[in-house]
Length: 94
Image 1: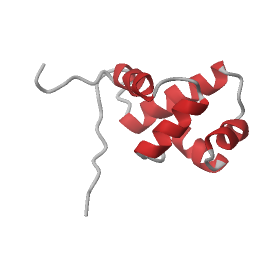
Image 2: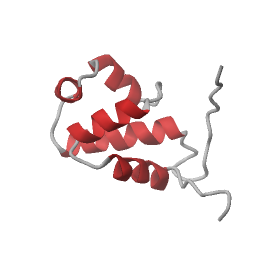
Image 3: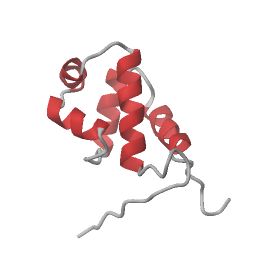
Image 4: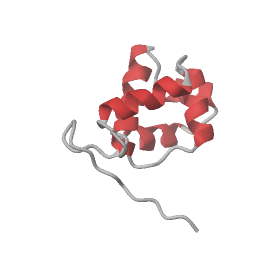
């Protein structure tokens, strides 16, 4: 069984990865002028799940990241890079 740890980073008021992901998703959704309902429909996800993601209450699976990226017309790698930037992720080797 796997256990997940919520990590906090110094930028953006100590956002968790989930909170940073949620803010990025919300920003991209609004930029595309999509409602949560429309994004949910396009990404084949539940609207309440989108809401939980945007509030940093749920963690997306890899499949979810790809579904959202496709619907938001952004490569999944760019979506993850935006989250990295938002929470100032640094590789421990750096």
